[in-house]
Length: 104
Length: 257
Image (tube, rainbow over all chains, first blue to last red; front, side, top):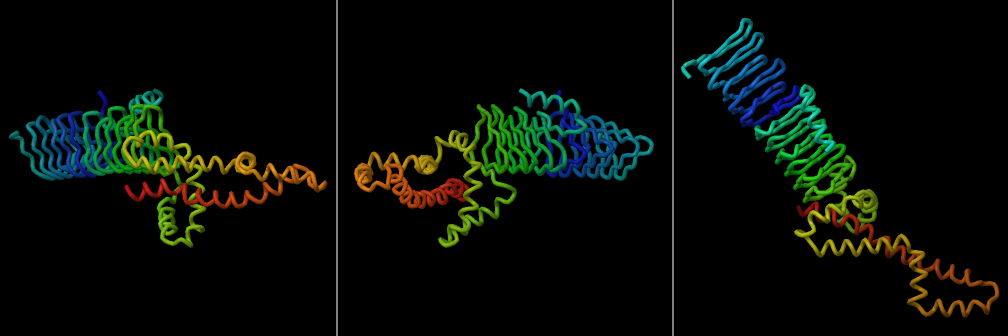
């Protein structure tokens, strides 16, 4: 299955929708709505409200995150916004500002 | 086929390339400094300093600016490339192309205008407008505008004609064909003039009859003065149409659409 990759020099200003995995190494602004997995890598910057099944964040996310299954904040990530997911993992070293709602 | 190999190769090394997968749709502006492979869909605008690849399943409905554009899928929107635009077999492109190099493969569908001028086409377009507005300015601006246009579109006109033949402006294209015929005659003016004179005018037939009387003028010499006099007139007549002629299709289409 072809993976969707947003490269490190790419800037997307708008809306991303779809039903396949997404890897963000660049910048995404606007809104992201997926039914699969999102990985925000070290160089990735997401300034958007994110709606997805699962998300793993190594980079920066500014905006509300809604994951229907799981949200994982890895060490050295920076997240500003509210997280709503049944399972939330925050690793040691992660930076997070916002509220967490695990009621699903 | 080579391009599909390229696609797969570069998909396998995704660190250097951005891929929009078949299940992804982006509406908005995409910009960047690396290759972008589109197998899904992008609506909006694309601005790259590298190459945009549109896979056979990819759809891009956007204004595109890139270093190069390689289309095997569908692209709707105007395309500006600094290097090359390539339409592979099976590609569909609706919109205007502006690029110094354009390749359209057999089996590609294209509808729109092509400009193959250099990096400064907008000023040239303005010059053309100015030339139209001022009859005096036409001679100044018409020449530099006409020459590059005359060199490059010759390659591109066949596909352009194919793609839009059915739909748009049949009479104008007929004009263009007639004018093309004229230019062919112009290039072979010397040959054509002689043959015309022999066939149409009875005077050249009379001239050889005259020439024997003065011993100085051999038949060859008699032809030359006769040949020298008309060609300037013919050349003037025929120089003018190319100036006005060659920009016309480009001009009209560019400004009307």
